[in-house]
Image 1 (tube, rainbow, N blue to C red):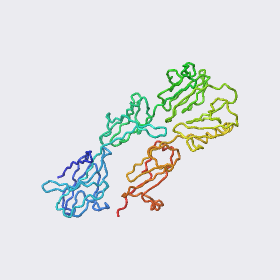
Image 2: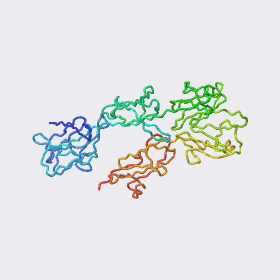
Image 3: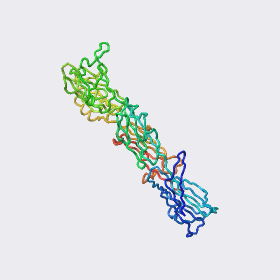
Length: 516
């Protein structure tokens, strides 16, 4: 007669149940001569083999097994074969002694997730019937949520938000059910806009401020959800000649003829210090000014104007920058004759010229003499740096004659490319020891703003008295005698690493130490 055993187990505060019914496979026979008859219960969610030796080379029969006092039972590493969820886990073997009256006594519940010795029949055991029962269960699925924006140094700034799972505010879901995650950013509708998400969202509804993620099922789950937001930009139009005492706003004198955002006219009251709000990176701005004026950009590259509508039209986009104030300033065009100052356009940066007294040389002003010394500054927008700069920082800055500037500015631009800083997150988590990262000798962690080809040094140290060792081969194994418990390597930053995570575990392997 077959026996049916329904398994349940409590781990910590969570109750988890073995899926299905465990069935006793063996019927008692007299084929073997051992004094104790062993039956092996089946768990429908686990694949386990049993052996009589530590090397797991001599299998035990699960249909007819008898052992003597002192004999041992070993098991292979239990393989999970649950078809409902990825969160089923083997937990332990429970050993029962069965009495003649049909009752049973629990002898031991031994946790052994790595496989190996299950049980030794005690020398003083007087019973005749033992059953081995493998137990497992489901862990509760715990979801992690993160909402952030980046500051001017590309450091993450945590934001609060409303995360909904199946329409409810909770972070735990059933391990065997599908679920849908939605992020509600209505609290930030006036201050931030949606940039991206991990995983990629199904849709982003700006009208109701909701980011909807694809439904995840129990076998293909997503446990971590991240949303990046960005503060809206404001673009100021500054008229330096405006004076609140004479009440002459720029629109009344027609200095600015029109402003459009993404093809639509921008409407706001006239004044000397206007502002366009709720702009996003990539928004296209078109400003038409009176023919007597020109625009100078700060934080934006307004480019070269074209004649249009009785004046000049400037077309530019809002840059993907952080922290900088975005401004366009009205300036009167020079009416003087002679050579004018010419400043070329450069992507993601501005070029500024200063005379020997430190005064900015504005485009279209009368140029200084060719031999006069000026200072040339290439100042990148926030989040960018100048490659091959001469002053060790992120900008280019050099003094030269005005004639040298005219003759060499194209070469200077080509040799000092403007590059975007890369944002890389350094993951220190490791189950076997501690990971530390260093840039230019300084220990760093979390999200870092780095340059392409910059070197990050990774140092891993095993936990004290660890049962594991760092796996090494060839010459590396020979040199490991000098530092057996640590590993160091250098990681060169490449452009494809932008906005990715460096996991220290990818750069080395560990293996269990040989038993002595």
